[in-house]
Image (cartoon, rainbow, N blue to C red; front, side):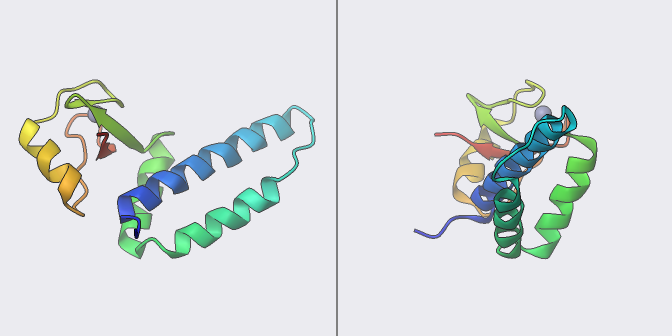
Length: 111
Ligand SMILES: [Zn+2]
């Protein structure tokens, strides 16, 4: 099954967070194996994400460490604000990407 653009974005964020962690470790003077592979994988993945979505993500990431967050029980796990239930139905089914009106993070719905 093809991944939705949002799923790709979540994977991209996972990689970004891992790359950042690797950088933190490096700053402490330790050597990190596999960080080149991480960056390569990140580049590959970024290619399969549409430009507008990617730039939206990058802009958000400049401000917020975790730009894409899950919604659970209609609660945004970025800021813990309740989301309208109607959004949840569409958020699961649509390719449309919703952002939290409170914190501005991009949202995805957990089953
Ligand atoms: Zn929020």
